[in-house]
Image (cartoon, rainbow, N blue to C red; front, side, top):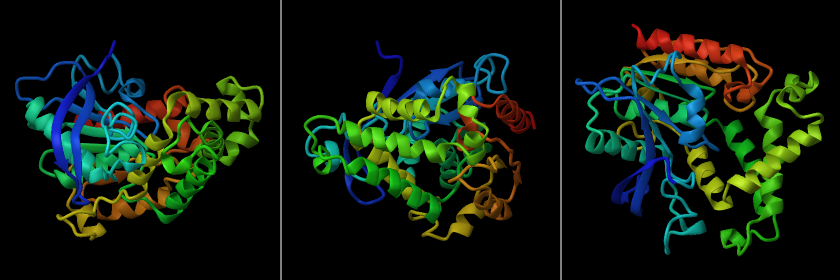
Length: 337
């Protein structure tokens, strides 16, 4: 039984000029919308996330409490639940699925909130990794609607180094003999396993491996960790879906589109939302330096980096309790101004 709802968008013109046919966004809501329609918190999904995984970022008694807020958890395009290569019909199935930008995602999320859910203001957009990138996009694309954002382990524009990291995991996937340019008759299992194994080396910091912290996650050896990452990608992810979202990630840039015309500083300066940027200093691909640059130009922003040997995965619910405590503290600061 499905535990989410579907918003039918119809045919949507993308930033590229192409049309995404019969577009669908899936989402789940928690809590109740208040009379002013302004107690809304938007949680987009991260790269290998769904609305279900987002449940680790909120709960009763936490900063994001469904007893107080109306939480909208939205599955991004390409994650297998919203419109994706794996669930689209010909001629947009598989490798023929059009390139989707964060602009396209937020444009459609805005339609969901305003047309379907009748939301007027958003109290907070927050999220981890690609979800955090969408928080920046929300605040720049609809600056008068969003009161605050808290992207963690994310950036407003994908760096060249981050781009190269993604090229590495992509190369591991498409080297599978069954890949067939995305028209595979059976899943490219070897490629998916390789994708996961390569990714694991970037998801955690060097200190994580030096201190053998994988044992705290229940793995006796590094090989057990790598096998788990490989099998997770085989079990849970379609290869074309992974590459569709990877392309979205690589092209992430809040200045893309007709508003800012690639003027990145102008896009940052346009953000009116109260902003807390929360990088992890040991994150290997969303670097604190990028957030330092952003904080110089986002008018009402504060940079609050955190240290964790878990690196990018410090934000994964259950990994680092201190990160979770600091995250809730920062969210409370924004919501209780």
